[in-house]
Image (tube, rainbow, N blue to C red; front, side):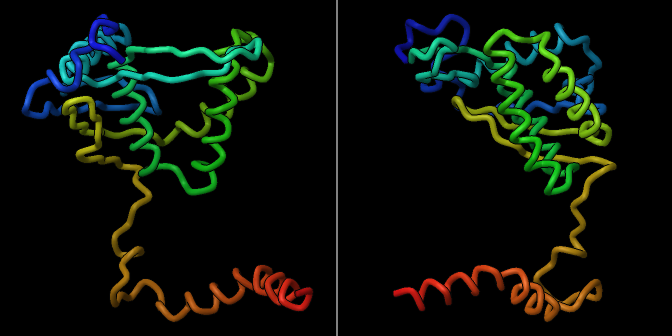
Length: 204
């Protein structure tokens, strides 16, 4: 968008030439500290708004689908929200298992739709809340974010509930499991696709 459309965010090209780092601490999915200081929700988002806006972070220029079906262009400024979303998601990558993470992406899209359409008090929203609350039980930790000229990227994540274990994911020699076991798994996992491929060849 044109610079004169922006109300609070510094255009990325005019943002500082040095990155700014910010640390956000979460407890059960809820942000509670920024840069080591405990803050109430409004104080926390206000603090992040200021820092992120100075670094050109949080500009969204999009064509969206309205509830009534029409498309419209919107330019939104959400500096603090952008940083929080990115940091929280990074912590979820570390603390949530694969299936929960994938299904939560579906839930997130539906939840956003309900909020956008203004049906906050719908029963389905309450049901989704229960799912989200369960997923956040172990989303606790600290995420360091790098803010630089419109970009918001993770620069480190730590959690007592991290599911990442370097000993289990190494591609080199290790004592955790036999690397050759992967061959049998791949053969079984790909068997349905192999059967279909053979069928398609016969049909040609």
